[in-house]
Image (cartoon, rainbow, N blue to C red):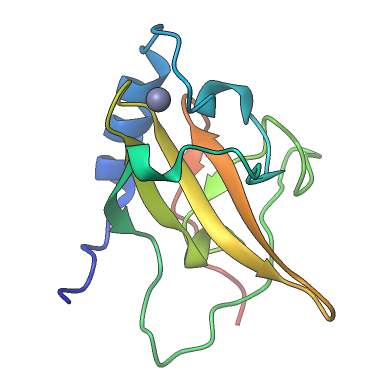
Length: 133
Ligand SMILES: [Zn+2]
């Protein structure tokens, strides 16, 4: 298995801009997931193809620090996508093969559960700010 290409700020910004232009209705419903959402059981996973990752060094522990300079929080639809912050620093970038919308996905692991989550990649502010040590 070849490792997923790591996407940088420019690549992700271009994908988000293109994704935001899509108006076609689609079974994936990615456009409805403006904020982090549990992946629904009926989600058409087979339509998605992986196009890259935002995760860094697999041997480093990615930070859990979040980036919210303008009063957003994890669940905000307008929370910035901060590449070096949680949870974006462990996300996969996927694209619907039918409508071409892009989304971010990762698995949230709590004490007693694991939950796959999805957020549309469309028009957010995307920043590449260093995380605190
Ligand atoms: Zn779609």
